Length: 275
Image (tube, rainbow, N blue to C red; front, side, top):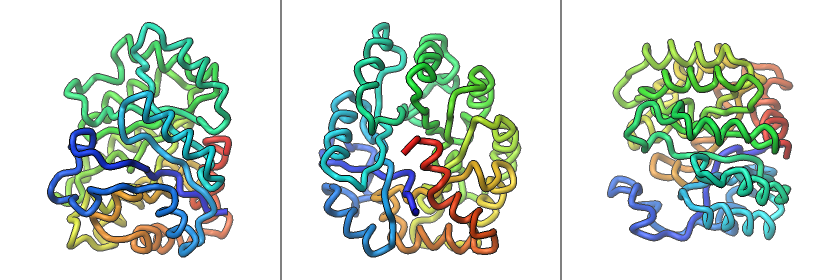
């Protein structure tokens, strides 16, 4: 079974989606399940995990509604304010939703490099395991030091790093990112999504050969049991199409055993998110 572990839906709104700049104008429109279902049928994808793109409870509810109406949406990664004084009852109320698997915060957009390790955020994270919720880590490479301190504090919490921590592929920066990713990967409760890579390269000029060293590093560091394929649709459309993104991963892992390939393309996501 092939599971796309990372994609988004939205009704496009210029203010809400201000992060979609002029270079990404191709995705300034609505993207809904009917659009993605056609793509999945064409590419043999069996299901997906829908991930928040807006930091509101309304976004979480929106994704849960879509998941209730579309069986191919196997799980939802929503948003709650983990710093809230009322986070515990909020988590309790969301725990009734079977398809809600975990949460994410857009930490990459926070000016505070140590956002992840501030006491009020840590309190919220400490409650997730009780409800069997996962946490997606969305950061830039300069925040990996904080990630390392963060994951050390929660050895039993299931974490996954989104988009291989968004290395600066376009600029060819590698060494600092690689050192810290290896350290983070030593924590066996942390997985990694091989997703979102084409949009960290040059949108128009990227080649698989430019991205392979980054994929090789995370394969070596995390192993085939802790990597999961994700398309980052529709964001990936600014740098190509679904075929190119899927083929980037499937070609890279083609020399692995069939079991290892199956793990990366679906089994790991099923296990991580309890799909």
